[in-house]
Length: 169
Image (tube, rainbow, N blue to C red; front, side, top):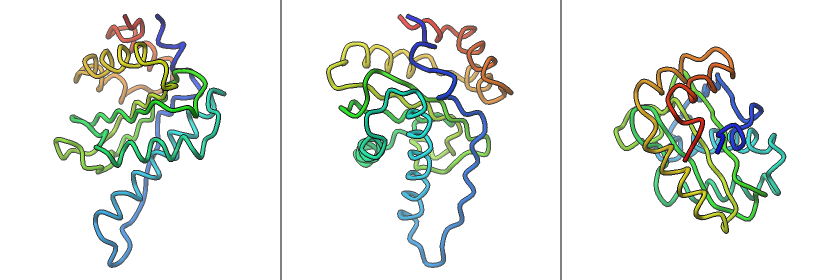
């Protein structure tokens, strides 16, 4: 199975910079959620560009509600926002790179720099879980460095090919 099938070029953004200031007297948790909302909104915009999104507003809500259950900001700068929802036609992924990093209550407390989003219809469990597992296991420091240093989308796909993620099993 070819990863490009699920991660089209229009769903990849190499440089998203989130410049957001904490408002005076704004509680830290509200500031955190404002940042998460902006990241998720951009991810939904990327996913919507694929033509596989039925309702972008509802998809945002679904991703947001999933994030409320438990953070998808994992470790070492990697976040994996994901949800199964009726608001997409088929499994689709997006890759959003934030070179400066965004503090999002990651498990290790580090800023998240690479957001690999995955959405799928609820009936697509087997494929969804297989790809989720391969991505979670396949992200390592060398791949992260290659993705973060990519200067164009071809380099993104080249890094995925080199590191064995382009052909998910």
